[in-house]
Image 1: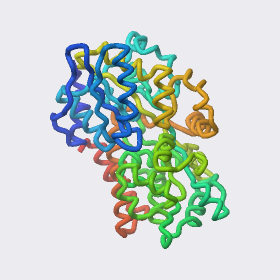
Image 2: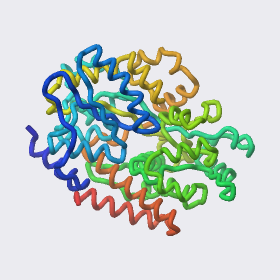
Image 3: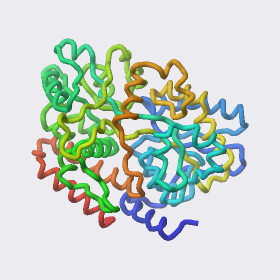
Image 4: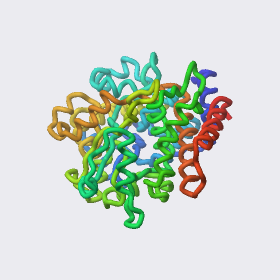
Length: 434
């Protein structure tokens, strides 16, 4: 039974997201089937299905449990999950962005992973400590366990850099200067490619760049979205487009598909994206030898109070719905997906990082590229706030950034005052729950 507190939290979430109790999908009751909502990790929903279906067939062969798979795009996933929490018609097992874990935990819809439950999926020590830190609010049983590890990096086109005689940037100022050197609209070539219409990307960069300027998103539970530090961080991101090094049409990119294809085709020289992109770029015909990856550079010197944050602790968690009619089967599937063998197969095909230590003994995860991303996670990454309001923050700030980029692409002047006004409106909406 949900407490009045969690019901209130859910009510706020529903108000913010405009969700009605109309979910889809259904839990099974015969013990022989499961419904699994997977997130879009590959270059397309169909590519995800082609990767997951053979693995789920292995699971069925081992356990006798058939899995009904649905792959859901990122723009739809959170709304589908929130709708399922009210309708009771959700899946048995679901992938969630790890930044959502505390928000979804507060709804009471997910099976808590207390010690006994964790033991059924291999125990807490099976997983990387950094990934386990992003599975729910501190001091509470995790709402999920890690599935795929991710970190941001700056991908650059080696040929375009060599032709221009420039080196990978080591500071943010270098990045902007190199981007201008590599931008030639007449040739259809731009310095940086963006996924401008993705609210999740907007939220991630607002957090990362805000932290570089010393921003604190929440202080004693109160939002601080419109501080000078956050204005500076969001402006740092939006200025890439207003500065003329991003194709204005990138503001329409809701998914990463077009951004990655443009990079693979040499239409953009740099992109800031998570490590899963390695698999998608291969699908787009770009060999790993054709690009390099370095940490996203930070301003030099860092602003007062700023932190060296080149990524958030990104990743995908896997959770069981608390009202599953096949709870034992759900945990068996989670244990299977996070087993060493499946971690090697799935992360190898999807370009993500294993979340279990033993999988890193496989040679495919001992390359310089993987070492770069592991280094970012270890030395230059911070977790997004693990609080119940996190998903509201992502939606409000991410949407604000998305709208600023769209306005800039349409020719509207976006200066610090415009950023301030947009963030103040988001802050007020967050504060009042309206």
